Image (cartoon, rainbow, N blue to C red; front, side):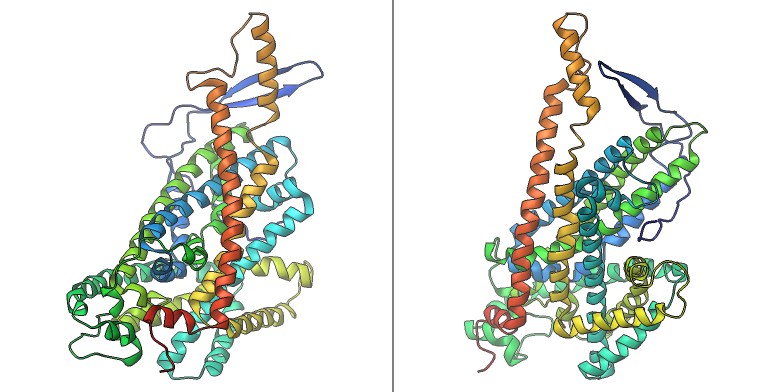
Length: 534
């Protein structure tokens, strides 16, 4: 049994749009001397790629992507530069989506070999096939780090909101938050709180709308800021309001826009990767599409047929969701940086002017994050409870264990109290492993492009051509073996790049976070150009 929660099966509703061109399932048989291929035509009905299940999967994946990470993108953009950040976000979106497709292809190869198990999740199946127990431990560890880091970021945000609006000390806010989130963690049936993820998405849309409104006002202040002296611009944030400047005007808006600051890659990498947080749930969505396809398939339809339709539908889901995510993230990061310049706060909400709109957004978002804390921790409970308490009925022990784990998260928030720092660290470690490093390593190890069927097909084709009896089965109007080899080479390059960029970004991202924790005023003084001790 997988330690991760089972995906929700989504009903498949066939639409009236034209069917895609029929695919072909290829089965390979092999004996000691030869190999032969037989083609199994895919059914033209009722299976279809464009179904209600596909569109719901798209909405679910996009909903899991747009989260707390979007709040830190303007600050990350100010560190890395406008042009570098825009290009980097696009490449990060391409890289993480490619990693998901790599995982799907590896899963297909493992299933064709018959070495996987239906009782385990997709990630576990791939990890075991690639590196055995080490692969399983690596993927489970990365998922735990990512989910715990995400939950800790939620914890930090709730603590900050309570401190600001309830006038409590940091210690008291931590204690109150621990009580509230421990109570939320006692919820074991999550259907009652799942709707809050949709409310959370609406809240983020509201925050983005506020950003657009405030950004237009802040950009109008550039002319006013241009009349300030250099000293006023540098130390305005320290000295407070300056006569003649409205509250929305930020000194950083008058500064030149940096296009690329390569030394800021480490500070940018963690939040940028964290923003694509749908990576952790993508495989659950893939599995749910497959189950829907299997339920709707006619009796006798092979698993290969169902998987090929599932893979094709999932490619459209990933491509559409990640394209929308890239557009949203680029716009938020660019708008926040253009409006507030280098003085933009770690989370964009802090840069908004004080008022009911900002307060309402903070409070509603804190409530939503607190309630969805149970959803984010559900994969964690699925791993640690069976591992520590064993499987079966442990009604007396699990509440205590959950309270202890939430307390450990609170301790992590004491060590890293800033939301943006927690997001950066989680992205640089957990989501970098999950979205870059491990998928690339699994792909390079399993090499689904070089399947046994392809190898045998090439050897048989070479023998037939040498006798002049047949054209190579691999040759086609799409480019034959040359096109296949070029595609394989590109996949290998992308996989190597994922591993290299992920490792580099992780090291630099972790280093940047710990530098900020050791010298919390250094980054502020660098952006202001003046000492906070003066």
